[in-house]
Length: 200
Image (cartoon, rainbow, N blue to C red):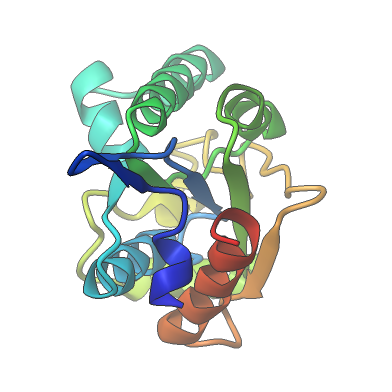
């Protein structure tokens, strides 16, 4: 798979010319395993000699909206910036893994329109499993804590899957059931889809 993942670059007079980078949006409910899978995916690619930058909506949100309210207007701004950054990176030959819920399809569709080599990886996971996981996790990769608990206490009405809608992808390039597969198994399925779609 390593050779196939490197296809698209070429050398002329000793200079490596990079192809346009690709972008994989790892989407799913909070607690579905997005951050874990995104980081493991980047690590696996790196071990194969392929660099991919993990672009996290949580990290970007801390810069754009330090005290977020998670309104539709805020989400439009954050996801608009996220897609713009991913577009610029891929245009400069950088592969991007977006780690973001992207609860509205329009956010992901915007990325699909703007980034030529784009795919969605949907981590499908029942809401009750996500709630249980999120309540127990220690390393939240910078994500807000106790999002579901706050929703149940009536402190938040903007949690995807509860107070706010999560619009599942209609035709994702790859779907993995993250409640049935280990993070490593999820990564293997996504790696296969990347190789088949971008590296032939």
